[in-house]
Structures are given as structure tokens and as C-alpha cells.
Image 1 (cartoon, rainbow, N blue to C red):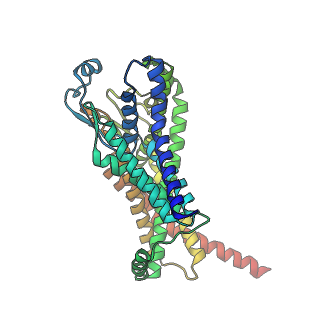
Image 2: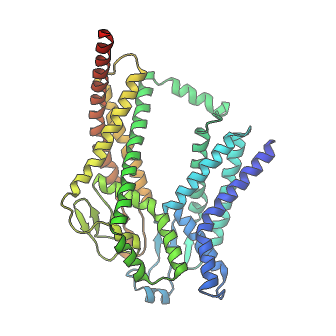
Image 3: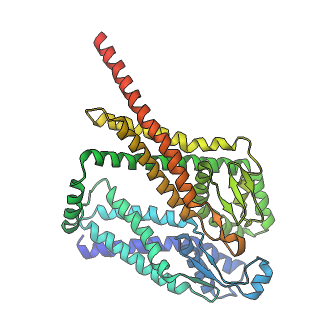
Length: 418
């Protein structure tokens, strides 16, 4: 394929990714338009609603001014004044990243990898701009700049990940970008580079481990409270299509819940409205949004809730042991204790930054009044993660080296006896 054909195919793939993201909300809303409303309402109302959901899922803020009749029906404190929705349904962003990775891998397999990636990202940005400017109404208005930039940046991140991790091709940066970057990297001593790489790997692995445990905990909690979740579904009295739309919204909400579970294990927990708290010390809630998934939240005071704090500590320790063993296999000389302690501390910093950013991304305003505070405190989550993972990782870096040396000595003794 020539360069133009490659760019056009990449642009088409970007169009398909956008269509999938918007279609997840638009298809059930369109069916609801035909079955429940009998085609009696302008379809563009549902189009705008689907685009608003897609934009919200990509982190775009929505400014809301509810009509008077809607305010009276909802009876929400604070709804009479304009408010913002800043709570991202991260399932849409996660889908965009995964599809972006696929696009990046396809681009890396062509002869014009950066052309294909650039065309896909540019097309995605143009489509995001068109969608943003088609969605604004007197009731809900998306932030225009965010609507253009945030979905594009999320998709671009996935594309770059796909380019960097493509198995068949390892695309290199253009000369004008690679030469200055390479010169700066060569100035860093090799030992420092190894130390920073180890900290990045260990901190990322620790966050991944915490998220895996959190996902399993959410799954177990939903199963254990399944009767409560079903009861909340029945309380809402939604019809079939309403139940399907609600289920899709909750599936898009699951990544947020997994991050919230991670913040629970770290210690701060989450807030579901001003003055509420869900943490290992106990659960204190007022009125919360009527999502059935909230039926899986822990209730009351947990006698052994503090044991959840061991999760980031154990995950940080195990990650550090594995990283130390990997370093010992690559290096000919043993590493100093001071360097290993610093590396473990840096792992905690990396983990704190990553989990703090995830917590910030998963929180926001879910409505007016007290619902402006929903989710974890990112600064507190990041700080506690840094301490818990950092201390455990520092110990793990020391213990991992001793274990490796004892294993080597036993191996030498066995070989000598033979």
C-alpha cells in the first residue's frame, strides 16, 4: 500500500472506533425511542444524549441547567442552580484505549507507521470536534475544548502504546526527534538508568497487582450481595430497554468501582456525597444515587477491615522481590543496599503517582448539591500508596537480594559435592 491508502485506512479505523463508542449508548437509546416513545420525540434528542454519555466517559465536563418541571420531579437539593457533571464513566475511555492499541499495532505493521498513526489520531480529533459541537443544548452543554482534546488524547495514548509494543515492527522516532532524545539519555549513567527502569517496572507492577486484587474483590462483593443488587433493580421498575440501558451504564462504571476498591485497600476509601465515607474503618452513607451496583458496597463497621491495608503492602513487597531477582540475574556484581532502598522508595513514588492519577480520573461530580463529591481523594490515595508500597518495596529489594544469594550458594554447594 502507498502512503495515501495507508492514511485513508487509518482514518477509517478511527471512524469505526468513534462509531463503536457512541453506538454503545446510541443503539439502546434508539430502540427505546421506537418502543417506549413510539417515535414521537425528535431522534436528535437521543443522539445528543448518546454523544453526551460518550463525552462524559472520556472525561469531558458537562454543564447542566435542568428545566423547572424536571427539578420538581427529581426533588434533588441544589438542582435549581446550574451544576456540572464531571464524573467519567471510564469504561468508554478504557474501550478507546484498547481499540487505540489495536490501531497502533496495525499502523506499526505498515510501511508508514507514523503516517498511519497520525492520520488516525487527526481523524479521531476531527470527529470528536464534530460530535462535541453537535451535542450542545440549553439543558446540557459539553466543554468545547475538553470535548476536542480529551477523547483525542485518550485514543492517541492507546495508539502510541500499540506502536511501542508492536511485535512485528519496532518503529523508531524520526531523526529530528531521536537524536536529541538519545543524546539526553546517554548523559544519564548506566546504573541510574537501570535503577530508574527498575523503579518504573516495580511501581507499575505494584499498581497492576493492586488493581487485580481490587477487581477480584469487586467481583466477590457483587456475588455476595447479588440479592441486594437485584432488589435495587426491581425498585427502579424499569422496563426491558430501560434495564438494558442501565446495565450498559453500570458496565461502563465498573472501572471506576475497581479503582475505588483500590483506594479502599490503600486506606482513604471513597465518598459518595459530601459527608459520606466508605473505608476499611466503616461505611457512613446518606442518600446515594440509586444505581443497583451500589448494593455491593460494604455496610456498617467492618471488624477486620483493617486487614485490607495489607494488600498494597504485600503487593509492593512481592513486586520488589521479583524486580530485585531480575536485576541480580542481569548484573555481574551485587547491588548496594543503599541503592536498593532508594529503588524501592522510587517504586513507591511511581505507584503513588499512578494510583493517584487513576483516583483523580475516577472521581468527580455526579450531580448537584452533596453529589459534587463522589470518589476517592487522589492526593491522599497517592500519598498513602507512596508510603505503603515504598516501605514494603524497600524491604523487598533487600530480602530479594538475600534470597537470591542464598539460592546461588546452595547451588554452588550442590555442584561442588557432585
